[in-house]
Structures are given as C-alpha cells and as structure tokens.
Image 1 (cartoon, rainbow, N blue to C red):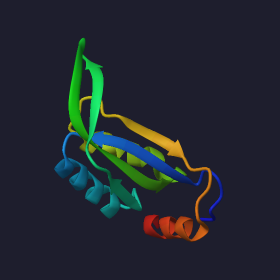
Image 2: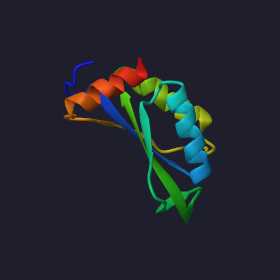
Image 3: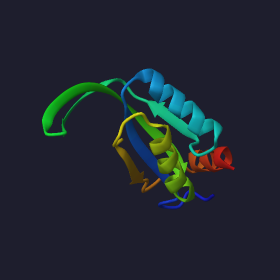
Amino acid sequence: MSPERNELMLVYSLFGSAEQARAVARTLVAERLAACANILGPCTSIYEWQGKVEEGAEVPVLFKTSADRRAALMARIAQLHDYDVPAILALPVDAAHPPFAVWVAEQLA
C-alpha cells in the first residue's frame, strides 16, 4: 500500500470498561482487521438513552486500518461489543507518514 490519501482509516469506538476495550482490541489485531489499537484514558460521556439523560465513564479506542478493511472492522466491533447501539465511527486519514502507512499495510497483509 502506498501512503496515498484515504488508504488509511481510523475507526473510533467507546467501550464500557478498559477490560472490554483491551479484549476487543487484541481480537481485532489478531484477526488482522486492525494494525494497531490505541486505548485512550477513560472519559465521561453524557447522552440520552431511552428517554433519560445518562452520564457514565467510557474508554475510547482508536483502531488503525485500511480503507478496504474498514467495513469488516466496523462489523466485527459491533459483533464483539456489549452495547446495544455502540458508537463506531470511521474517519479518513488525509495524510500519513509513509513508513507508518507501509507498516500498517504489512500488519494487515
């Protein structure tokens, strides 16, 4: 893979615990759907769910993948996730350090 625009993707999701974030991240890297997962520090989320405003701690994760693996990665996150309606967002990468883009491609091969 050359490091051209839109070949790399970031997929963002939130998990209810660090343990679940870690388990899902390890699975997706082992399955070669993600080259890498960054488990970020806990955050506070405020949202409406079933007519009630909720507030809770969540653990964000950024997955690095390729555009051609994006859909499979998102589907697998949804399958492994314990939320009824998980937040799973794909973000295009406008530019990447060329050696990093090559590394991602190698990890997903």
